[in-house]
Image 1 (cartoon, rainbow, N blue to C red):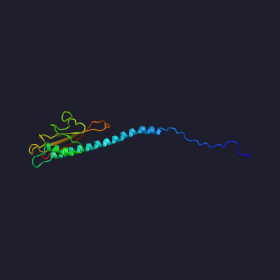
Image 2 (image 1 turned 90 degrees about the horizontal axis):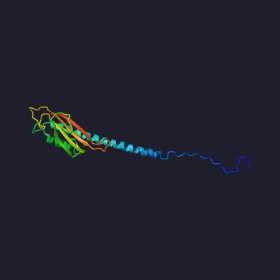
Image 3 (image 1 turned 45 degrees about the vertical axis):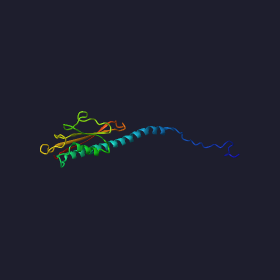
Length: 178
């Protein structure tokens, strides 16, 4: 027999395979991370919606203040009814539930419950201070360059990710030309 020959079975080279430690580790990490990521994405989407509603309410308040402060051909100011129609048109994409307008007899800040009603979810409430004018129509001799303050309060209803029941405020101040 030769030296290099053996009589038994040929020994195999045993490969050491890595043990499959943590087979479910990736699954557990995914199960923990997924709800956090879903809440994060939903929160970002709700924040974007809230910002869009804030822009709409701010734009509506600015348009209304500019409109009421301007002079019309028939009267010295367009009045609250015309302003309400403009705000309703501005907020048509946001809501059709608009309480318009609540006239407040003092300059801002306005107090919820006292000066205006708190808006419910999806409702817009408009509060207006017309200076010394009764209904924002004014007259040239006595009310020249009066202050007009328009506040639009919107009841934002989110998915309770940001706390739910948030009132978004848009406001604008203008000086009348009448």
